[in-house]
Image (cartoon, rainbow, N blue to C red; front, side, top):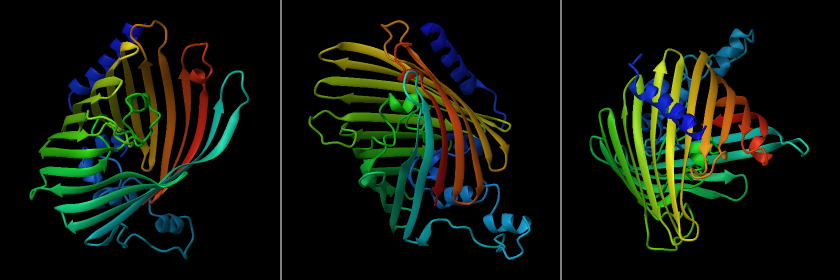
Length: 377
């Protein structure tokens, strides 16, 4: 069974990487044929959007403009926004801001326990981009302000070459590794340990030449905590991006006091008509002084369908094998999500997730329903 599931994931990923062209959320990059740096200040994606990314979210991504929708609905007093300049985040030529707010209602069903439902403040973040020398040198800050205490996710100085084909970053940042999914609970993000809760301090450099890019980071390996050893974490990501498809790979190694971890992955994207496909498979090797070596892997296949302007329907299959030496311990997760962006700066998202794990663990077999509101600037 394990070998069959691994073969299926590899076959699906191979189909994405070898398919003939047919012409952060990573699926939007696949849908538009753009690199992450086109829509995000961070060259490897995530965090504040660039002017292009903000305008895309407020125009092309949305079903319409609020004032125009109200006018068409028969409200003659509604403002006509068709001739207005959409918000792009700039306050001045030297300073830009942005923000994301996500709040949700989640219901969870776990066998042998009472059903639970609750409202959650998932994440509220604000972004500041101080352009000391426009297009060349900037100071960037990404701050999570809720829930709980304020937490700095990214704070770095970013220096670009004159032609913006190379950059150097110093400070705290998200590590370059795999697809930067918004969902930190996805198996490829959760079990790799590289997600929106695990930024690190260090240096990163990158080259971007046409469709090809490469990014290398050297960091403490403390995942936002205090460094306690002289070992460092190395992260490398490289990819090729074309209008209808992309393929990439990344590797990460982290040496610690009691354990070393080595990871690698392949990821890809493909656009076929109105469907944007994503795939990634990760392989992990953990060397611990007390338990020896453990090998594991995780995979994801995802299809995003642009049903109509402003509407995206997503189906996702995930698989996780926590230990290749242990039989019948695998986990799977199936997700069905609908996203609707009715007008600029607002998206609503509803979905269902079905988990399957070992029968003795009720939590690994939970069923989840959720409804989320996302406000973005």
